Image 1 (spheres, rainbow, N blue to C red):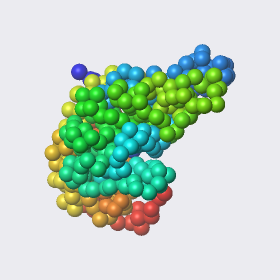
Image 2: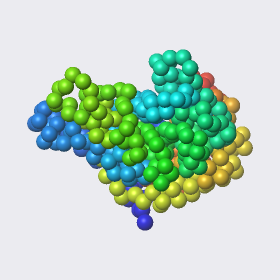
Image 3: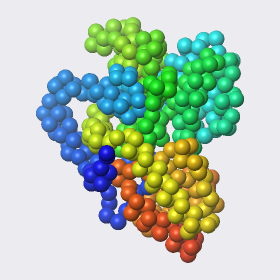
Image 4: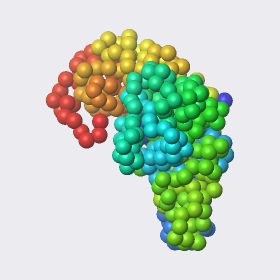
Length: 397
């Protein structure tokens, strides 16, 4: 049984703040600063370039990949870390399209994170005429799976509403028509149990700065199913994805299995922070995590609906169809969120009218939820949000 009081004590949480935005940027593990300092001083400082061997920097992407793999139900040796999520989306899409040369359509939905769609558009422009990105409503994806589809690319959890796709069902449907799947786990990894191997996913990608708490700019990860690992051809054939980087061959030969999906130099300092966070995750049972998350979300929904009649639930009411976040519609949602932040409760806003709250049992408990409900209720009841200062849009919402 996971002791979430113990995990909460392992994070730095500013005094007086209730942090309901770990689905956007996770808080700082208390050991991360020490771990990064050690990397800077004892490894970079004292070892200099020998740190690639002595400190294990070169192996970090795969070592950390396996630790993430436990959280997403991946087979050992089939996840690697590095680069950004957009880069990993591009890699997975390009590899999947090449494996279906007789097809020209990528299927996605309008609940997908926009940058995934941008990467798909850019890739298809490079490939030339005849390719199509087909975007449908989330509930139309199953019906849109036809024998035209080369790749189904979906974010498992809608970043705005928390609506969750059924990975097992949609993957099976995609395979039934001969399509491959790319799953974006940005709002899944660390939010609830994911079962890539069990559900038959072909490719998956995700980030580590949200629920995995590795800090701003933390590296992404990519998964390739074992049945594809020796077949995929990396469109971004980076030096570190080469079979023998230090042979310095002029021709590219892909590395073995997941190693071929490496591109750029590992972000060593950021991976040190990720390592500190994964030490906490090693203490967490994912079924316990899911049960606690559902309880917190249900508590929040009930409390907000009882005290804030102007807010309309945007997330699925059924917890089985929802990730680890709760969203509400409110026409002046941006201003209301700024007022809430000013009163010590951190959530975020997503256009056009979504107030979004993430629930991470690792550092959020029932007492935090009760307090957040009370503060939000006061802000809405007394219209504390209706001030010009709260309506001025910042660069990041």
